[in-house]
Amino acid sequence: MFRFEDPQYLYLLAIVALLALIRFLTYRNQKKLLRKFGDPELVSQLMPLVSRWRPGVKFWLLEGALALLIVMLARPQFGKSISQKQKAGIEAIIAIDVSNSMLAVDKASDGELSRMQRAKMIVTKLIDKFSNDRIGLVVFAGDAFIQLPITSDFVSAKMFLNSIAPSMIRNQGTDVAAAIRTASHCFTQREHVGKAIIIITDGEDHEGEAVEAARLAHEEEGRNVYVLGIGSAKGALVPNPNGNGYMIDNTGQQVMSRLNEQMCADVAKAGGGAYIHVENNNTAQKQLEDALDKLEKAESTQYSDFDEQFQAVGLLALLLLIIEVIILDRQNPAIRKLKLFKR
Image (cartoon, rainbow, N blue to C red; front, top):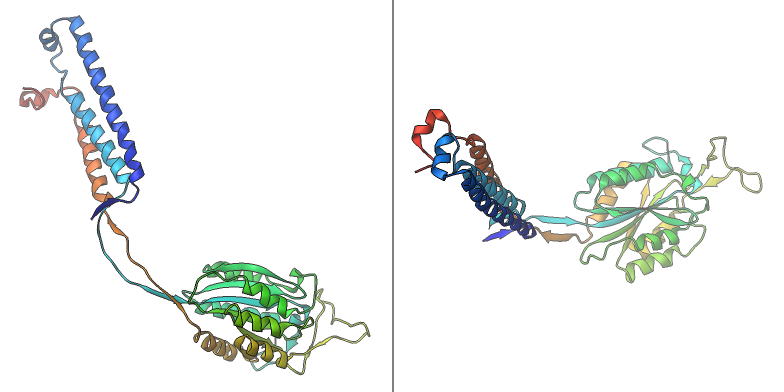
C-alpha cells in the first residue's frame, strides 16, 4: 500500500506549476525580442556558442528536483511491516512523610540513617526497578500536595525526590488521610491497570481518618494502599531542623518520635495493600516489590509504522541537481561536434 504520511505538503507542487507557467511566458517574450535583432538563423551564426536548449534543460532539471523535494517532505511510504511488542506496568503514587519526625535517626541492622534518608533510598531503588510503569510523588505533613504528577520520566522523578525536605511544608504534623486523598487523585483514567498508593511514614498520624480514607480509596476508587513504616517502637529523638540539638515540647522535654505500627497496619489492611516495617532497606525493598508484582499490569500491542521511502526520492532529487550543475549554459567547444542539444 502506497501512502503519504504528510500529504499536506503536496500542495506545494503548485509552486512547480507556477514556475513552469512563468518560464513559458518568459520564453515566448524572449523569442519576440530576439526577432527584433534580426533573422534568428543569422543571429544563431553570430553567437555559435549560445545553446537554445541548454537553459531549458537546466530549468526542467531544477523543476524536477524541486518537485521531488516536495514529495520527499510529504514522506512517501510503501509497505507495512507489523511487529508486536507487549508492554506491561502499573501506576504508583508514592507519598512521603516530610514531617520533622522523619529527621530522627533510629538504630537499625543496616546502619544509622535518618528516616528521611531511608525513605529516599527505598524510593530510588524502586524507581530503578521500574521499566514500563508510571510514578508520581506526593509529600505530606500537616498538609499534602503533589510534588511530581504521574509520569514515566524516571530521571525527573529522582530529581524531584532529592529535593524533598521537611522545610517544604510549614504546617507540621502527620496527616496520612490527606496524603491518601491527594495521591488518589493523581492517577490516570486508564483501566485494567494496577494503581498503588505507597505511604512512607513513621506512623504518627496526628489528624486521624487515615483508615477511612484508605478504605474509600480501595473500595470506591480501586487503589491499593501500601504503608512502609520507618522508625522503631522504642523511638528516637527528633533533631531541630536548624541543626542545634533536639526539639523540645511545651513541657520542656525532648521530643521522642515512635513508630505507630498498629496504625500503619490498619491503614494498609483497609486499603487492600500490605504493611512493611522498614528495619533493613534491602529486605523491605524486596517485600514491596513482591507485593506490587501481584497487581494487574496494563498491556498494549504496538505496530510498526509504514516503511519510509523518502530516501530514494531524495537521492533522485540529488542526482538531478548534480546533472544540472554539470550542464553549462553555453556549448562546450570541445564537444560541440557531438550536438547533444540541437538537431
